[in-house]
Image (cartoon, rainbow, N blue to C red; front, side, top):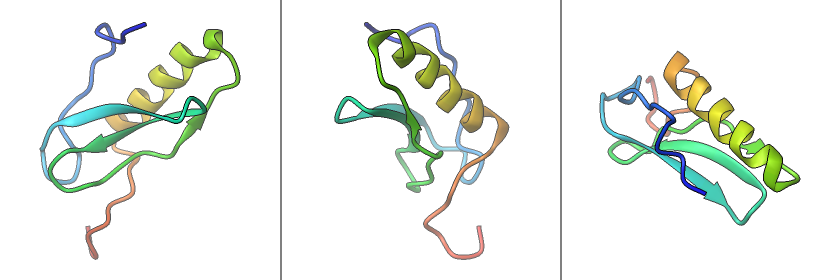
Length: 73
């Protein structure tokens, strides 16, 4: 299953590209390919919940709710 219909805005910290990631089949998050900022991990427990978790991670990203590894960002 792909998530081509989920829109990701540029990184709220550095304006770099975001990438939707799946972590070992249990959670989804979005991470910036430039600065490493990322959203919280959104857990899922079934294939049905996977798409909703991906959309939730994208929504957090698009709202600017990220953790940045850069001090003071």
